[in-house]
Image (cartoon, rainbow, N blue to C red; front, side, top):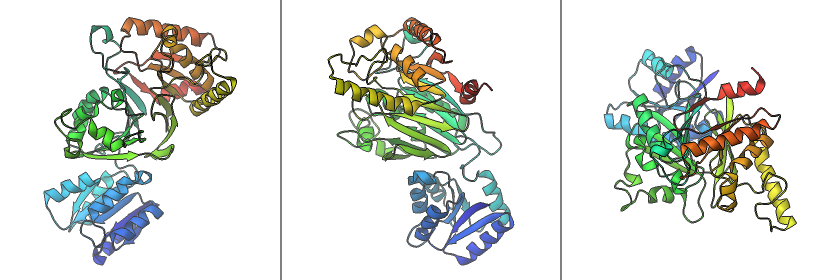
Length: 445
């Protein structure tokens, strides 16, 4: 039975609202003030919370913000209600994370119609909060930025693209963004064209804060819209926290609009756990072999999985047993092998693997220790982990479209030498991959 929690210090409204919902198949929980209500949310995990705006101890805005600050409660929808009809209150409720706003007094029909618009446990019927008339599309990913180090627009990169790291993943009701390189700008324009002035819920997972992975954030249109909510998740850097790093690139004289003055509802969370949820999507993280604090992510949807390692250098070469540095002692080589095996097990059986393959084998020999991989080792890693489809990613700024053609041809030749049915392609801006089609290839369906 679906659960709803009513938080209201007005006993008559709790009783009236509860009766309507019980008659329509809801299990009703009640709380007379905000702090008690928040404790019930954590214990009972209701699909929907109906919360009065003006309450002692913890008002409705605070209830919204605390629910939205807890990643484990992302499935919970929140409706703020109030006897006041100020438009500024409605706007503030959405900025605090509310899914809708209801003015008292309301009729049973108004209440039930509002709840029908909100998908219990999912915040609405489609990614990013669409109208209920839309259907949920298959889980998919789209490449918006595929280049490494620096954007390289121009005639030599027109086919594969010159924007830096950014991928959009849609799964169920979630829009999850992997990295905020310059590709984020195009994604933002597309989202605004699609959703307009509807409330928009987004999650951004950062692999790390090197500039080519965050430089698109100041140009992301949704953060300039008060009805949009962006939750940024990543791991703390060595010298400055995640908030300081992201806001630093928008300080004067680098950018005219400081992060703290943006009208969008932005929440920045420094992750502590390597295994967490974004709505129904399970996310795992693993530390990559790259300078600073850098991770790769694996996302598990009900239609397939995708792993994203945009910056990663093999701990040891896959060809034979040669270490990255041939002079390493045997103990160091054993350690490197063990670390490499951890990555292989982390990626075990993933459907789509998006992997740093910045160099060809000859180029890699002069870039050992830079924190990036080569095509040969990328194919070997995909084969050893049992991945189904490999996308070459983080293309070198000097690599033209013709160079990438040669690299993928070589990668396919390597994959064809093994019995595993590994599909290999090059990440290309605008390309869309439906996860079910890849997972189906794995199972033969």
